Image 1 (cartoon, rainbow, N blue to C red):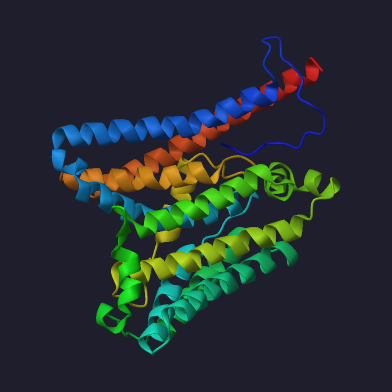
Image 2 (cartoon, rainbow, N blue to C red; image 1 turned 45 degrees about the vertical axis):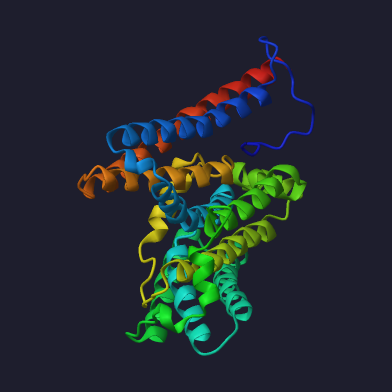
Length: 347
């Protein structure tokens, strides 16, 4: 399911084919997510045929665990990208949160206060980004590139070359990262809950659809009375909170952290979002597609390992998918524009 690409006051008109332009537009973008599902099925099927161990219970569990944190970050990033902005700082936020949360937990904090503290640190980073982008009107690329380096510097200053190991952390936290309920690991379940909640909000609430209106045309949204600055601030706050939660889950998953955990992940997250059908120009896409993009990239990486292919090809394939996704976005944008023109002509 994808969000609307424009704000429409009147009911959609019917095209000569008997189908509304809005329905055709929705169908076009749902096809993006369906194509991701088909690609996943084909990839898993072909890899499983070559190496049956790929489809073992342990193999599937590893894919889900490896996808969970990336998909959670992609969900937050997609909210920002939908508003025609970008957050390059998410990888640094994950690293900072993972280390400071490990630090306070090793220092004797309880699990719940430690988790809340980690999410609060992520929220503070998102709030800083949002204030600079929305109220100070500094370009998102400049702001988040700057905060990326600032957060990395703070992380290295706090870590000061230290390493915190799993033996220093509460067993309950480690159980969160490696435990399961009814055979399903906790981490993907947590990601699924947040994906469904945010996806439902963006699709079903007027304030959620305003994010799409901003991405489609910030000036038109402003003239329509949409609180553009507050919505952009909210988008960055959501991204920061989810990055903070991802940092806590990173700690729970791996146990051992140093000062540069998740270094470089911001580009992987953006790749997952764009491959998942969220247009980099804003206004189009869904958190479901972003999560599917994260799952596809993770599955490709796992498949290449199983097939003993040079890791270089994972980067090459990711880059090719990114270029393909951007090209498809351009084609779809032209298709949508044509549909809307036809709708106006027959109105």
